[in-house]
Image 1 (tube, rainbow, N blue to C red):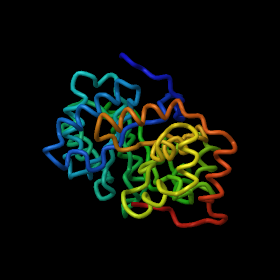
Image 2 (image 1 turned 60 degrees about the vertical axis):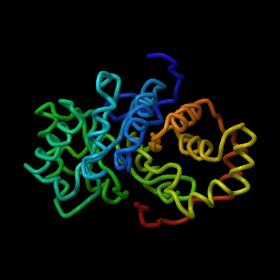
Image 3 (image 1 turned 135 degrees about the horizontal axis):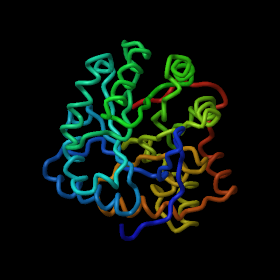
Image 4 (image 1 turned 180 degrees about the vertical axis):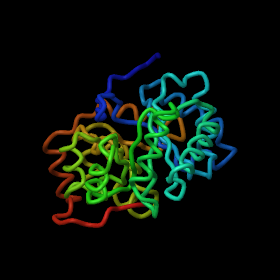
Length: 288
């Protein structure tokens, strides 16, 4: 591939190394008028080394997977493809059917990683059995979870083959630091990366508060980057987080790729900690 940028990586429990910035696709595929721009953005992201593409059967009820399938045509071998199953589809035979439907929409014969989107009523042990069956059948290479808190993760790994879990994907950004109290340290102890969704915060008042904060602007200007780029760079500081910013335009993709070259100093991080401190005590897991 051309124009490859050297990147920091995260390592999965099975030894697989992945670039620390991937591409999120929530709401991508919803607007047909943006289809070609979104496909071009995803392909450029892969070219620039952001080979992890994350989608889900929930996103547009399959529209995102269909667009991703079109975007990765001809470059499937260069992509680390992730999708997620609804909790109500995560039991026994239903997980097989859901996975097969995702594969058809994505126009591929396997997923590199398949996640339980969040915990529902189906027992985790049953979901693990379904995931392991998918691995055995070659439909997925590995599996993980999303939106599980520390107690859930401790329960998970005690179950039969629960230690095969590769990642936990959760909300994480400068304005939502609750996982730093216990979940992030637990995952680091178990050498299991966090996948951070919405690392730039969801659009709205919180994102506006972050990007317009004087400290964020000051540190960003010091590095010659935008506040959005600073927020993304901040999530990478531990070396155990793979961030998934939405990549819907080539301009944003190039901005995301440049973040690999940003090195925040201890003083930068101290200033950001003072402006947006992590909670001192356990808080409920943030989910959007």
